[in-house]
Amino acid sequence: MMATPDDGRKQVRNLSTLIERLVACPPHCGASSRKRNFGREQFTLIELLVACRPKLRSGSSRRERRPTLWSFTLIELLACQPELNERRQVRSRFTLIELLVVIAIIGILASLLLPALGRARDKALDIKCLANQRSCALAILTYAEDNNGWMPYSDSIGLFPDTYYSISPKRDLIPLLAPYIQSFAVWQCTRIGEAALINDPANDASIQRRGTYSYWGYLSGIGGTVLPGRLEQQSSMNAVVSDVAYTWSGNWRTTHDAGPGSLRTPYSDMPSFQLYFNGFPAGVNQVYADGHGAWSDGDELKYLYSNGSMPCYGAGDTVLSGP
Image 1: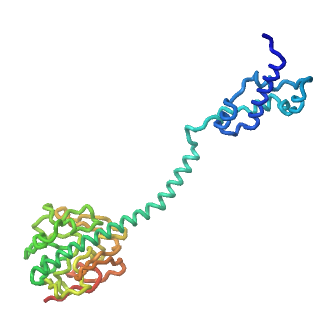
Image 2: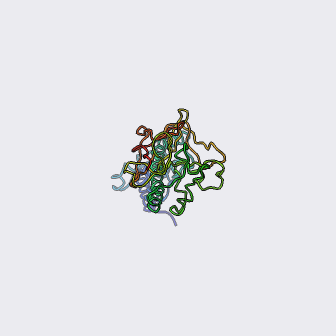
Image 3: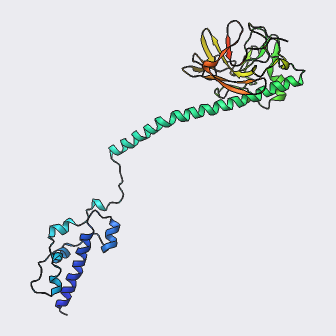
């Protein structure tokens, strides 16, 4: 069956429509748009050659009214073909510059966030430390109420506020407070998380034993005189329990270090005694005789007591006089 002129005109119209859509969607259009417009991304060379053939000299007025459809060259139509690289919708690799930029951004964000996270962590530890001291102070004050107003007596003359056991005479805070404290984990500063508990069997019972909290309730006066205090002597600003902060040969020993101290366990047979050495105290938590507690910054600390060689510091009033 021979093709008629009408068949040829129909084919030309179809190709014209394809070209018209191609021009309406240049290569920068997305692949989804090209597929939606004309169903495929490329044309064959034969189709383009047919579409670019010279305009027929004889034809209907309809062809005469659409001369612009025939004004494209083969090069122009080929330029409209989608590039192979442009059809890639997802790249499988990043360039080195892009990776360096991302790493730099992450580093900047980390430098901004890490100090804030560190301060938030320290604040949380300080709050937990103060809660521990409140538990210790409550046990001490309850003991005094149950014992005719006498505070627990755990030290010998001339030793340190952080001593909870002495060998002569033998005074031990642990059996006195055990009925009032569920766990001696509360008798430990949260900034010193690796220290052993004060009732740990690893602490040698042949020497005095020390911890990370100071107990002030048994001291009487400045200069090393030690007698058990009485509950009736306590005021709202008398210290009962606090963090350790003292100087030895002019160097600080403290539980809350502001830098550049180093955490040490000076005695292998006393693992419950662990402090920051040779720094400066960031401050201390301290609980008072009326049960309230507060944080005091390092520059607010004042001298409270000395055994002659170890000046001890805290906040509030000085230690009590004897009964």
